[in-house]
Every structure is written in structure tokens, then in C-alpha cells.
Image 1 (cartoon, helix red, strand yellow):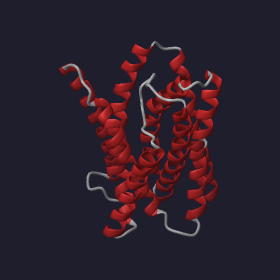
Image 2: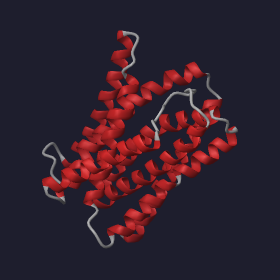
Image 3: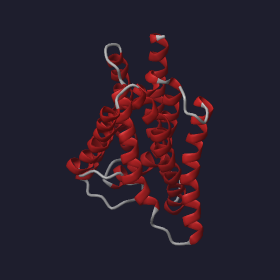
Length: 253
């Protein structure tokens, strides 16, 4: 079983890292087209992350801990990601060509590397506690990574990186995800990783509420509002349906 876990976690980690290469698509699309694609994806990602956190990660993590300890771990994840943005002056931008100063590219890569490392830690821990919940958490994170990597690639190119260099550095910063995932596997041999599951859930809640939801609130028509809200709800609904499929309406293990 340990070998199976190693294979699943390693493959999942490398696949998540490979999403960094999707940034190259920005060179094939017009900025207006990219913008039309990004915001719907962000709305879907926000719902998916919150659903993954509340319907899968929090129930799984809380089952192994007391309520107070669970709350501490959850808020630790939320607070850590707030600290990343405050102290690294890094804010996840999902626009293709945001105005950014050249020194910010280093901070973005650093922030992404830490973000991916902690994501790997939390998602792999969820998989080790409950493989089905871990897969849902991985899918939710992958949906979020698509618009993030498109935006990050645009930021790096705008900051002076050549296209190949931007892809390479984006990929290198993403490879910290499998590092965090493998660390979770190693830790799980000696300690209960339920706290790390909740830490990951706290990071999901922070990213969705602080980074993604504000992005989709700038609307210009009723149709736009309905579309974004609908995709947000679809993200929630899909993760809820998966929870019902896994545990039934009662939410039992």
C-alpha cells in the first residue's frame, strides 16, 4: 500500500506541476479571448476550491481531531497564505497582461513555489487520509491552477522573460508541489496528518475567498453576473455530488 501511495502521489504531483506549461497558450490567444476564458474558469475554480474544502477536506480532517484542534489547523492554513501575500507583496493575478514591475516577477515565482509546496503537503495528506477525498482536492486545485498559470506566464513575459524562460521558471516553481506531497507521505509514516488536511483546506478557503471571488465581482451586465454565479455554483455542486457519491447524504465514512 505504501508503494501504491508513493506512485499515486508522485504521478499526481508531476501532473499538477505540468499544468504550469499551459501558460504557453497565452501566445496563441488574443488578449480579449484569453480574458473571456479566464474569468469563467476563475468562477468555476472558486466554487470547486470551496467545495473541496468544505465537503471533503474539512470533514476528513476533523474526523481525526477535536473541534478546537481542527479550527486551529484550518485557520493556520488560512493565516499562512494571508502572510504569504502580505510579506511577499504577492497577489495572485489572473489577467493575461497585468501591469507589473520587473522585480515583482521574482516575488511571484517565490510565492508560487511556496504556494505549490504547501498545496502538495495538504492535498497529499488528504489523499493519505482518504484517497477519494484527495482526488477531489487534486481536481479542485488543478482547476484553480489553469487560470493561475495562464496569468503567471503573462506576468513573467510582461516582466521581461523570454517565452521559453517564462515556461521553464514557471515549471520549476511548480515542481515544489510534488516535493511537498512526498514530504507529506514521509511524515505520515510517524504522525497523523489530519492537521495537514485542515491546513490545506484553510489555504483553499483563503485562495477562493481572497483571490478568486474578488476577480469575478467586476461585472458589466446581468448576463455576466448570471454566468459567473452559475459557474461558481456548478463548482460547489460538483464537489457536493462527489461527496454524496463517496459517503451518501448522511456524510458517513
